[in-house]
Length: 97
Image 1 (cartoon, rainbow, N blue to C red):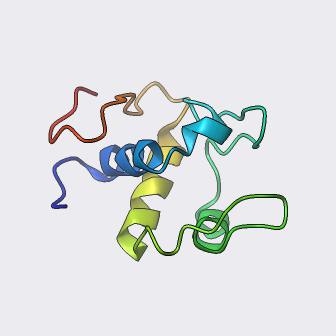
Image 2: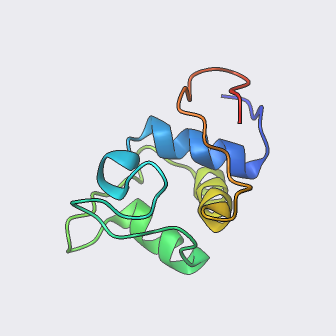
């Protein structure tokens, strides 16, 4: 899919497409099954998202490329700032932020 949004928007697209919100909550602030990942460190995202963790996080290396990980990091850095995209229809080419 060609990029149609800025990095944070594409990161939100990945967050929604892969159902990250089902465990981490719609705003990435934690849910019943997973911790708050808003503002997570880039190194942690780069390690845990592709490889998973012993705490139950599945590995997503088959579904995300390096650029997707960078976009996801950009999105998570904005969560809670009021500048993060909040769309839910990730399949729309130009979703409303």
